[in-house]
Amino acid sequence: MDSDKNMLVNHAASASTDGAGRVENNEQKTLSSKRRKSAFVGAICGHIFEWYDYAIYGFLAVYIGANFFNSDDPAVNVISAFAVFALAFFIRPIGGIVFGPMADRIGRKTTLLLVLSLMSAGTVLMGLLPTAASIGVLAPILLILLRLLQGLSAGGELGTVNTFIAEYAAKGRRGTATSIIAAASIVGLLLGAFVANGMSWALGEETMTEWGWRIPFLLAGPLGLLAIYIRMKLEESPDFEALKESNNTSESPLKEALRHPRKIFLVFCTVTLMGSSIYLVMTYSTTFLTTIVGFEWGPTFGYVVLAGAIAIVLTPISGYIGDRFARRRDYLILTSVLLALATVWFFLAAPDSTPTSLLAPWILLAIAFALLLGNPLAMMSELLPVHLRSTGSAIGYNLSIAIFGGSAPFIASSLIEWTDSPSSPVWYFLLTAAVSIGGLMLVRDSDVGGKGE
Image 1: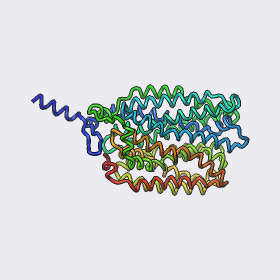
Image 2: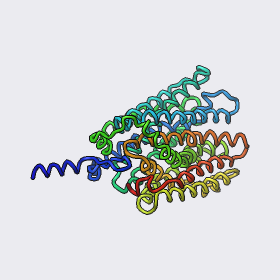
Image 3: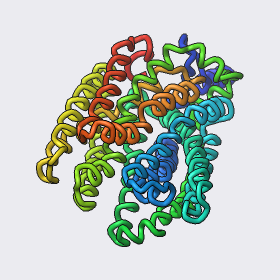
Image 4: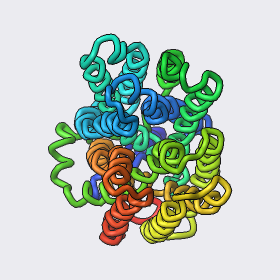
């Protein structure tokens, strides 16, 4: 009797593999709330600081352009700074190729620690760089190298942390869980916005241009150490533990993931509009509203904070809706269409507007953005089997962000310069909406393994 009982207990704690290659860990279903909460807090805190480090550059683009590029035209300096901003995104697929398979081979926790350490180091060093006035052309070269290091780190972060959270999520709550990661990204961006804009207000433009721009980068030192300490306390995800115990980890995750091009393509499309809209609403809008529309820093900062607050509140609600009340694919298509329409209204209303007259289009844009943001990451995790989840996510997500996300501020600024029309960036964002909607229409129920898997 005791022997039979032990066999039953062992079987209940073991991992089984379904037909799609996913591992179902029965122990995951009975995880203690304390362990799940600790995993969420640790992963999310690190993700907030990762996004602060990565995005602070965008908020300081005007000052970086003035210090590292020597054109007499301020618009050219800003475009050059955004070109470096975009360049970091083109190395993100390489970061995904390096760190995605690492997370699928040796574990999510170790990978999360490594990418966060690289990001923090790169950000601090950026704040210590001499400017073009001191060392000439070497200054933008060093800036580019450090930005590439940040891109390498970011390429391994999102796919890994999203996989980690998805694997800790309770059954049927994957959208709710991963939407918190999306909301944490906004918290990190808002933290960067508060620091950058707050310092601009406190120090003034001249002081910020001279030396104040360095401080937000240097703050990444203590923030990074805190985040690293928090992540060191994480326990490995239950699904990966089950993979290790059952010896079902892939020996070559990259090679195996590339045998599923359709899945990777669907991930690519799913996150395209999400990526471009993040950098429209939370990063590029600061430069657009101040240098193109002509708002003062106060209303601009208020706009960014308002959009961020709306996103932080509505994104988890949207994830919950995707879990409980709608087919995730159909809900994503609907919110993508709404966001496209809101983007059109915003850009058409922006020329010759005032902070008051542009407020309604901006609020609708922020609401539509938040309603979309709650579900792409859940869809991404559901499209891929557990043993390739981090690798496939990293490839599809980072390719999309490299092509359509990080390049958004650069292309938007360039379109305005080339066409002399403040509304011209709308065509780019409509293109990203078309890519996402088209891809989502190709998703079948069999692709995601069933609702709430």
